[in-house]
Image (tube, rainbow, N blue to C red; front, side, top):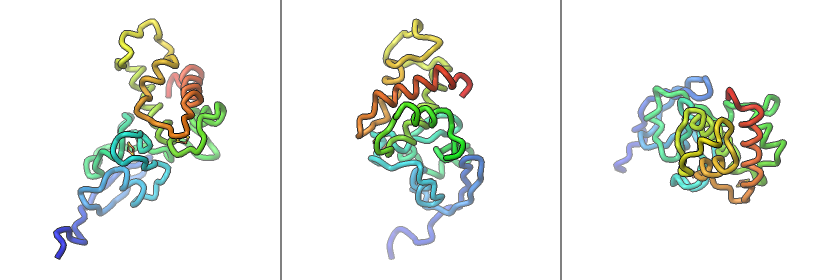
Length: 180
Ligand code: FES
Ligand code: FES
């Protein structure tokens, strides 16, 4: 007999995009796999599965995390937001619209992670979280491209669409993202 029992899943409930889901999962299932493989929320992407690319970024209670590095069972008390919870094809989130307007992607594989990460990042900026750029008090209250590049450095883009990604985030932050 395998040491992994076929029916060894634990009952858990996840709240994702405002909906509660009852699941039975092995305790070792990551939040990323729970979203993609068990809830069919495939907008969240698996790039490296090792915390190195940011493709799997989602928001947990408004904070950005790499969902490949977190176990689903840890998030039963949390509100999880994925790209599917931000906007729809008919009603884009303003940041999604900015990515379209500024051509902030090529293949699009990193894009949902970029967008979720940017929303979390702008929340950190508004709350005064420091970055490795040091004292940028002169940049406040508007975030600038240098801060965006630094604070988004955990989100890789293999198409190297970085200039347009930064432009899209800066446009959103300065024009529409004041209360996002
Ligand atoms: S898939 Fe999670 S950081 Fe790359
Ligand atoms: S748009 Fe292709 S990886 Fe970023």
